[in-house]
Length: 426
Image 1 (cartoon, rainbow, N blue to C red):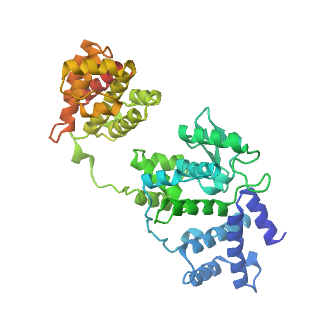
Image 2: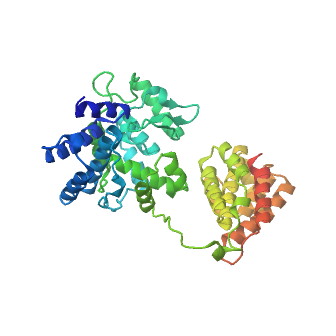
Image 3: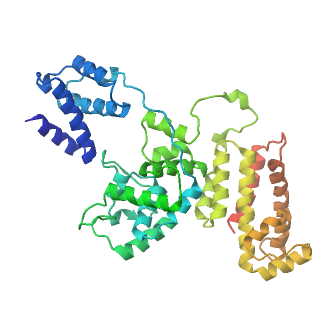
């Protein structure tokens, strides 16, 4: 069996994409040409090491890395040579961290599409952080709307993962499906039953960037980077996010830490924060996380997500403030459901100098104490419940103002229990 035949069998076993097959074959052929007087299977490890030393001077670190993996595949996996490739010293990759566009720029970009198919395609890439090669392989049945997931297959490894399916993305996908009715692939090319080409997707994105007036470079990998950075900016744990994306390579993990401005270096000891940060293993956030899953209002969810993230890392004061913000917004929304007439009649009795409330955001100019009074007067909460919430408002204020005050764990637990029972569960 020829070398090419052996390679093609291994490529098919591993479901390598055409680009990877081409890159590996090219690197191996260059090695074989360099030692043209030697049968490829007889090339030894010292000769490989010598060859890499020569090409290091003229090729990029990424190109050398392709050599490394191609050679290891052929000599160790196919021929069973067991060469010590781990001893090779590969050149360091460029550690440059790209400048990414902001969340507002992404919003403008997505709003600038006139073509529904183009908008859906780019929105899916950004909102899930998947690779463009993964997007190409999605079929309609991979949209698991009942589970709020998308089934994604890694074309290189064959592994499957399930990114979260946003309600906004699901709505867009439904509109797209009704209009285009894709058969084999979710996004099909010009010819029947073919995948949408990567080059076409690049052109779509570049055209949108120019139309939006974004001066920064925006590529397909930019969308993936933005997904990670923007998720972290909104409170998602970076380690958990990378795990869900099946990113385990140490170099790649370090890249994303740098991209998000996070440090994975240990720069303090637990003794430095004794008495300042609680033992988070004893602070159970399960109940509040269950409440989070039942909340549909985006404002309430955002504040509650922040509070959960704070409690998990021991940032008790910040957690107290954020969960209160979610609770007070919940009360405001309940008041609005009863009616603005009743709200303003109550407000008139409490403080007749205040302007009438016409929309939920108008509550923001009121003191939280006034909101509690209104909620009590129009029947959203009882007098007893209002009394308990008044006490908890004091705790929120202690935590929200600069001071040396730090709440006791049991006090925070009681605070959470009352907010959950009085507000979120009713």
